[in-house]
Length: 342
Image (cartoon, rainbow, N blue to C red; front, side, top):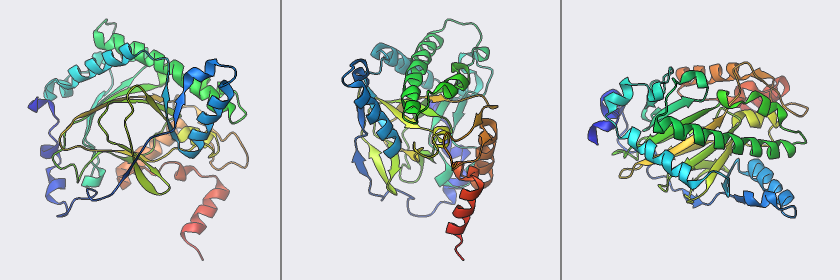
């Protein structure tokens, strides 16, 4: 078990040696909360369907996050995925680092934060980033491949359903997103947060927003996810049997700011490991993102341009700037004047 963990201290020793004497965020008091809960079974009831849809739209507008039950993904599939996830992450670190998961052609195994220049930029995390394009896999019938295919297909159908409801809330039909976010442009990420002996100094996952349209998250019962609301961090209480949905940057831009892509983070734990799996609804790099209403808050941009800007900011600044870089010209002028008043 010991050699299954990434060598965080060896790789980032200079960051730990130069750290301040006190922890960076261990003393911060954070309130626990329950996310808005939506029962999707009500969508099948003519008398309750419209109210259910309104609750989804309201949660996406006010919170940017909500949790769902009766989502249609069988518990047995989620349980099988978790078993495979635990098995794969229990392998020796060298095996995980040297071998491609599922034979993937891409760089699927990731850990830490290669560009970190301080502890506040480091994530105490290891993950498998799995593109869902069939071209990235060899033809295999491994247990991991089978359950990933089954889960990602189910999450894709669920995401399409929710996108349709959220688009309807904007007076649109959602076809633009569905046509540009095919399953083969989306990806799955398996996460493991190892126990962290310096949990007060290092995040499990640094504060960020998601660079997609929508994220479907299945987490275990170890508390750790936090989101920012009203300028304060609040801790999300785990709720067994639910999935968490959160709005991404692209949906915020497309909805012209109605739906909120909210900053969130994962706190590390000194004693317990934590697992989660996330499905990210992404378009192709060429897809153009344009606000669905006028006057537009954000200028038109491609997903490829957005990702490139995010990567550039993380490399140069150590953090993601996000949609602020893509404000429309009039909004950018107001934003600049607000920062630097005459």
